[in-house]
Length: 345
Image 1 (spheres, rainbow, N blue to C red):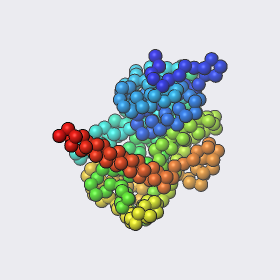
Image 2: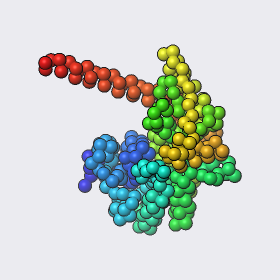
Image 3: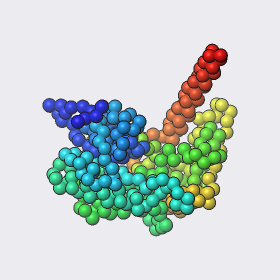
Image 4: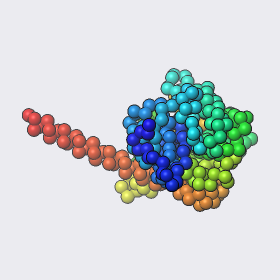
């Protein structure tokens, strides 16, 4: 039975059925929202909790069916993938924070990956599945300086190897995003992004490739528009390539009319490694080697696939606008509450 937001297949033209794993995650939700706009797909949004606020939000979109399944439960994936023609798969290393470990657990992601790929294999052997899009992570710009690589990078690269081992490369497109803009929204006291502060994990003069997480959805939509050309391909994808200082100056130009100055602040590496060791290793890796997206080649592909990447400037503007709206709404609510207290007296 279809959940709210789903549509019945047209008698004249049936929408392609696509399953999206981890549909309430940042990546998954972005993919669902982007594909929903096209009206070309019947989307199975796979999530562990179909009653959560995030699930209900995406479940209200056109052509979306909420399906309960878990990457840690192979049988639930088997049922969720029944009859699908396309699968978008992503995994996560995040498993609750613990002292001296952080929240990143490589073995947790590997188990998800093996379960996912095994069920992709099963779905393919049934004869319906013809395209698998896997979200990995960008390879190094300089392979000779790749080691040591972060554990949450190598887990995804090992899952890629498992795809090849099971002879699924022929139907697979691997998208390898770089760091997300959204990662700048950390909650460390004194290192929160604001009009005056742009926080980062690397030195201010190192080039750093980044991308808006919502752009993963744009890439999936684009790849699915030319599936035969992009099957078997693996693409490092990015939206920007700026130094930390250049990122701060991007924000500076947005707020300069307010007479404010934005400074780039590097989060101390020792603090990062204490709180989330693998992110500290990632920071070392970016400075030593860096992400390997070919920015010139990407512009050509983006034009072909009608992808307009989100710029850091536009992302920052949207973030500031949303923050201002939230503050205004909070102020109105507070004033309304105060007036009600006075009135009740």
